[in-house]
Image 1 (cartoon, rainbow, N blue to C red):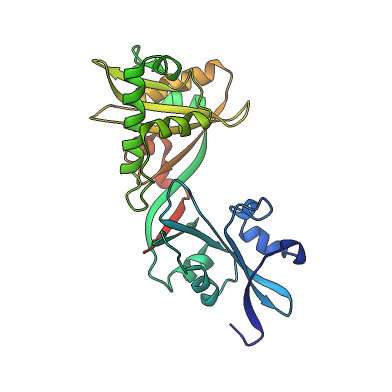
Image 2: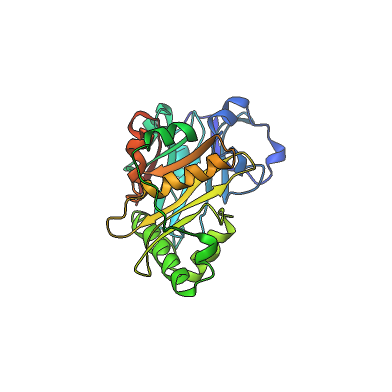
Length: 283
């Protein structure tokens, strides 16, 4: 950092104009700034001109992590400023696309470790169904709407959901909550009650896949979980047929390498050929 630069905490964003280049480099998290979804916003200034921006935020589900991001042209001094922690936080998480070489080069100056890759892709429903042509559609699946009327199965479902989520987020543990809270979180995410399916064998919940409408034309495969050796592809096929019957042409997936449940879809989705969102952790 040269002698004319300084790092300051911004309290009133209206006092500054953010250059378009910086906005573009923050495009995946920039929405947090105008909507005030951040804890701290700092800028590296040179003669009243913003040279780079860093922001941090909390995640109530993961209370031990401080989430941060920096714009292009950020310096080592800027990132170092973002690494200061306050209890109960004991780790920092930084995510960016795998081809954002400038940000990755900056991270390498600190002992960050890559702990997860996330693939976010959209697919044609018809194309996926062609690939699943030899998969037999199960006849015994229950819809989420049906399970919510059966207390025993409902409790099993959300205890499995809670367990699955906790086991696939061991690097950054989730807040310990009762299964009722997980039920509330899922339902607040507005899953499709008819097309979200649960596999039940001998009165035991063995797997689930939830579908979430993003809007009238967009649907996303959401929470995924299973126990034992349940094959999730037949469940997914039935959901895809349901979407096709509704006239939906495409479906979106978000799959983490740390999620051994959803990773069953990796070959079907050809994820290894896709660009991924890398998440790094510093403890």
